[in-house]
Image (cartoon, rainbow, N blue to C red):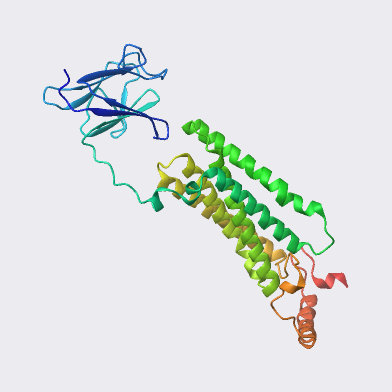
Length: 333
């Protein structure tokens, strides 16, 4: 007759997510791959009789390896153990299977408020979120293309944003879905699609705002900062995909992604500095409808005055010797 309180055995996947939970009301049980065990573990690296969990005469709960070839690994101590006191909780790995043993006295954390328990995308369902972000992206990219199309209407101008980019995003989400499936056995395709299209919406909004500010206010220098922001956004994108796969070691993942983003930004700044030495950007790269101009054009008198002021500087440059690897303006006389 059982005289001890029940305890729980949880089976974990590779990411640490609970895939099964079994309530045990017995003084002793065995675990293994054999069908004569109280709990059967379908893992080729688990012995037919692998583990015994039992109470001692003083009521303490112990975990004992039954002399197996691959042993029992204590996740907390990071070492193989022959016998382990469970206490309120113990986490071990047998073969490729994670096990967590908890007694009824184990204290769980208080319930999270609803606002914190669900991410915004999860609150409306990832399928609905994915469709919404896809529609938002097509709307944003169509508007951006229309405003920048200064010539006659051409359907081909809308294909990259309306067809090519969505296909690339779906392919990107498919790759992350495959990785998630291999790691956690759950693909979460719609979640990855929602993340990918959220990034595209943010990317095109940032690009459109930068183009508008450059054209309307002649803020050409703003274009220098857009690629740096894009690198940060790309880092957030990758972090969000990894976060969808596993919540474990999230600070370490964030540190690694952040470091890679910083390295990418440093390389970009270095390459941009080198290109600016040859041909710095001084004009807007994209035209928009004239009604979007917010800055008044320069008066004709000011324009010609500034042009005449350049003549002495050009004359001085023409007199200089050509630099190594290039030609001076005097070479074109």
